[in-house]
Image 1 (spheres, helix red, strand yellow):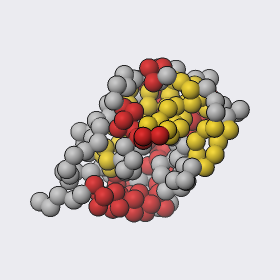
Image 2 (spheres, helix red, strand yellow):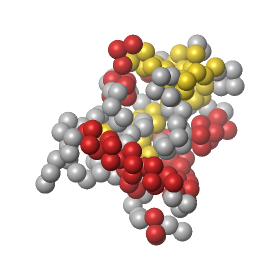
Image 3 (cartoon, one colour):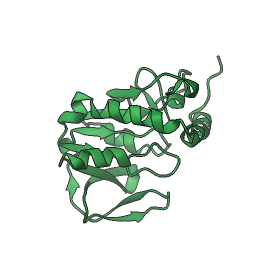
Image 4 (cartoon, one colour):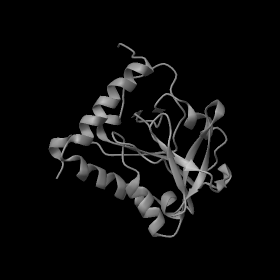
Length: 188
């Protein structure tokens, strides 16, 4: 078995995810993933949910943010700091956002929420093993943040993001992986 580097996997997964999200049947798959997340007991009981502001080519977090806010719970989004650290800031209608050099949007100013106050953290990634390890985008921000995180970490994985092939050192373990196993031809 040939073991790929993380960079090779990242490149392969970015293309696979882009192809998947461009497929007309992807909306049905995504709706099923969101509904699975929304019915998860940890997600339903969380008062504060941490989630990224997704970009094009990524799994959209807009439905997650809308679901949390519609139940009057708190959404917090990341802001990057020096030394590949990050903090989470409350997201509401007064939050000012700016684009970073990486193309992501993050809050300017705002109320920082302590790591210990985040009940559920929705963790992004490019690939996930069946036993809940992830390969992220390469910055290490989430790996650092998850160190000492006591809430529940959850990732959503589209079918092409489930990865069986071992690599070298993997990123941090995620508590829960919400996934669906079927091909696009069997959606419907």
